Structure formats: structure tokens, C-alpha cells
Length: 200
Length: 200
Image 1: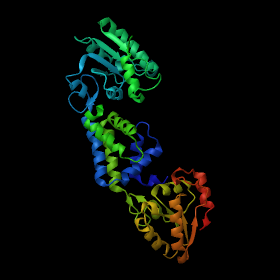
Image 2 (image 1 turned 90 degrees about the vertical axis):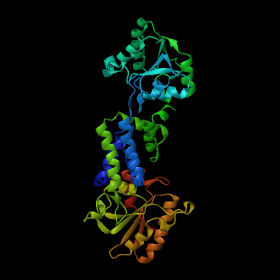
Image 3 (image 1 turned 120 degrees about the vertical axis):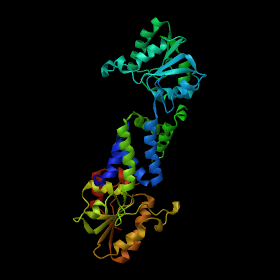
């Protein structure tokens, strides 16, 4: 292939190809887009990568992403700390925040328990959840893991550990289509799912 | 939206969103991919952007991209300089090179004549083509613009100017599906189109 001869173009396309869900043709197309930018724009792009990577880290309280000290939810004094919504990843936080209906705080697991893939509770932020849920003032934990088999297993596991602590444990109502990802749920569906949450 | 609160993530997603054909959701997904990389990988990515942008330029002979002095085709002494294949863009060079059947050299127009879009012959590398084709030793010009209305207009226009110079002017055979882009043609089809090229 000709691009083998343009080493720096090939290298750039490989970098794009390492991003989640980007195939070879798309990666090359994106590399060309960069070549067509003017130099200042390319510099801005490269800087945005480094800046995001350097500034963004996990919120020490909930595991959400932030470039401040705490994430914007934990920082917000009007949020109700007695209700913790447990999610698999940061994208789920974004999806639920979009509904503008949930006033509690989050706990991001950064994964789900998955025996098939060897993901045990120790590999996700499970212990941190049990610690948080055991603190004074926590009344309800809403489990909003994805409606997939692993998400269900994780929900059951969490519920088993939290109930003895005297915390109310609920699960998002099945308003969300089974087998899908929260990220793709529309806002109305997610809103209904929040309203209709049930005891586990 | 929550990401409005993570300024550096939002900025990175905007940068991805500026790439050709990338929508908002894909851009955000790619920004997350970067956050999930380790720091060395993110640095490598950012460097690849700057390096490609700084090193890659147009070949002074044919307009193809290169990070050397001449492009790899013009640099190759075994290529037949008596046959010039005229293409719209660098992607078309890549497509034809993949066939490994064409032994001549290229001329990249960087566009097509398009009266509707106000693209006149002066705005593409048309004058350079006429100059090259008028040089001693050039026997044939194969016009391989895309089989679109603008590509056809450009082919006709080029043909009109080149014929008086005594150069044989041919057009890729319609093996390539009409209305599409050379980039998507499979290698067999492109090979046939080269073989069956006809006088214009």
C-alpha cells in the first residue's frame, strides 16, 4: 500500500485505529483530515489530547471523571447524598444526568462483575461502594447497571451485600430495553425507568 | 450535559468532531478512548498528529503527498514517465497503487472543475498538468477522475486542452460503478477499468 511509503501518515492512521470502534478505512480518513487542517488547528488537536489526558482523573468520592478536585455532582451542595445511584461507567452518569431528574449522587463501578471474563468484585469499585453505603445518612442505593446478564449479576451481588446494612436497595425499572446499553437509551425511557424503580 | 462540566473532555470531543464524517456521539466515544489510554500512549498519539502535519507536504512534481522530497512514485526510477494518470485526490492514488498494475506516474489535481461550486480550472492543479503533459516524452494521459458529473466535466476539459499537444488522452473504462468514489472500488474492478481504458 502506498501509505506504507508515507511513514508519518501511516503512523497517524494507526493511532486513530487504536481508538475504540475505529476501523482501518475510518482511521485513514481521519488521518487525511488532520493533514488537511492548517497547522494551528492540528496543534490545538494535539494539545487537547494531552490536556485532557493530564487533567482528567477519577473523582475520589464517586469515581466519576473530573478535571477539578471533585466531580461536578459531588461538588454540588444541592445534590441529595442520601441516594446513591450505582452505574457501570462514566457514560452512564452522562446519560442519567441528561434526564435532569435524578438529584442524588453517583457511584461509578468502572466495570461489572463478570465470572466469564474473570472480573471479580475486587476488580471493580465494589468495596468503595459498600463503605460509602454504610455511612450515616445513606438511605437508598439505586442500582443502574446495564440490563445485561453481567449487569444483573452485579446488581444481585450488590443487593445481597447492602441489604444487611439496612439500606433500601432499588433497581432501575425495565423501561430500558433489555440487552442494550444505557448510553443509547432516550431520555424519556431513562426518565420512566428512574420513576418506576423497584426494590431488589 | 454533564460533559460541559469537564471542560478538557468537552474540548477534546470537539476536536474529534471536527474530523471529516465524525458525529457527536463518535467524537465523545473517541475522547473517552483517549482518557482510557495510559499517558505514554496519549503522548504518542498527540505527537503523531504534529509529526504528520509538519512532515507531510505535496510532491512538487505530481501533487501526491509525501514526507520526503519527492513522493514514492516520482522517486521510483522504474516508473514509466511517459504515462501520466490524472486523479482528483491522494486517496485515488492510494486506490490505484493497490492494484499494482499501473506503472506510470500520477498527477493529483486536488479537486475537480465544478461550475456549480465555483471551482474553476485555476483552482485545481490544471495548469501544472498542461505544462507536464507538454514536456518531451509524455505519450499518454489517463484521466482517472471519479465517474461523477464533475469528474466527467473535468475529464472533457482536460482532454480538450491536451489533444492539440499531440498527447494520447484516455479515460478509465466504466468498470467503476457510476456515481461512486474511486476510494470504494475493489481492486479487481479498478484493474479492469485500467485495462479497458478508452480514447476520449
